[in-house]
Image 1 (cartoon, rainbow, N blue to C red):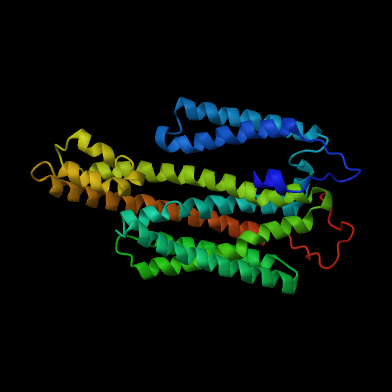
Image 2 (spheres, rainbow, N blue to C red; image 1 turned 120 degrees about the vertical axis):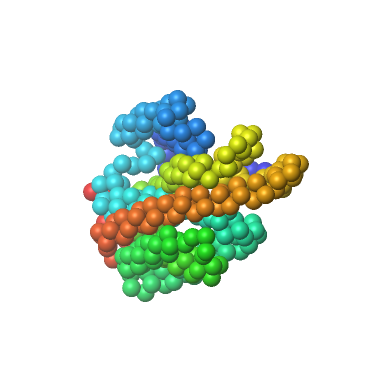
Length: 343
């Protein structure tokens, strides 16, 4: 309401814009089913009819979107941008970063609460180390880019540090101390801070002023899609291994209704007070609950460890991509005519 009442309303003189409504519609009809499918896949599985239908719809709409963008007067995402190797490589690397790094962050609180046994508050405090080191890295990479007028050193160093952080995560287990978690957080967070601004800078530096707005949005767009894909894939890895390992340690004769709450470990931290009441009603129930929770812990160690290993491999791919990222000297000073067109 404040924007509607107070924000100045003006139109640039002599400028006419053609909104790409067809592109907007097909992109929405591609992204929304994709996000729904990747969200539901953890609950229904990749082979479920609804997930397969949504993925097929997303694929069809993607083809339609690309066809429309080729002919649009002012395309929502100008495909000519991807003719530039810097923009295409930075977009791919942003997707990999979102998949490998942000997909893991989602499962870190589960590891700390379900495996290390810390409280929700303590797990949040541990994540603060990653966020603060990321801020420091972002400040430093800005200074490096400005001083040396190049972004590639930050890109390579940042991706290596994130990969190293993922390796440190992959080495963690049930006996891991909080100090080890903090060190891994600091390394990965600092690398993330170095790397995240690089792709925006590289793309803005390579794009023409005509396409600057659309180009600037590409890193965030691909990083968001990558993180959603990463969460879905890692969730499948976690649940598949967790359910198999948990079933191996269930005491014989345990009622199925008592095991139902343990089917999804993501919900267990919130259900612990209710489980204490349910199992406390029967003699020996609390001892059974303790056994099952110990079984959950060991099953989570294996499942989450596979996530960390997978993320380390993904970030190793990011290191390779950043090594091949073309370094164009950064534009400096007053705006000039475009010297780095897309084609």
